[in-house]
Image (cartoon, rainbow, N blue to C red):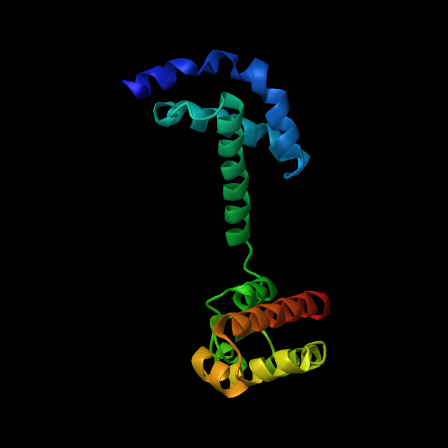
Length: 181
């Protein structure tokens, strides 16, 4: 019964008049101008299809805005899949929390089929200079195959501190690669 009541709260016939301008403004901040209208229309269609799931816990505008944000994320997700640049794949691999523990393991990845490994090693070695001594030490231990527990024991740091240092090092390396690779 609650579903029928929440659907009755929706007024799809008024969405364009009441919410289109607002949704355009939100989308315009996050998308190229030529895609805004299409994404807003997709938002309205998705809202119509999922109207039966509207629980009435928020206003129409908030609900439509959340659908719009998912549509924008879907757009960028599908656009990134279309790109198949080694640089982008490498940066994604470096920033991924499931990233491999050694640079040498990357050389067997398909990402590197079109990349000269020697050039990459030069860039990575130059990037090591921007890391703090502790970050360098952790990256070298990871490269040598140490797991997190072994690194924590060897450096006498907590697991969370280890992950923070790894995260910072990966971010710095990613930024360095995006500028210099």
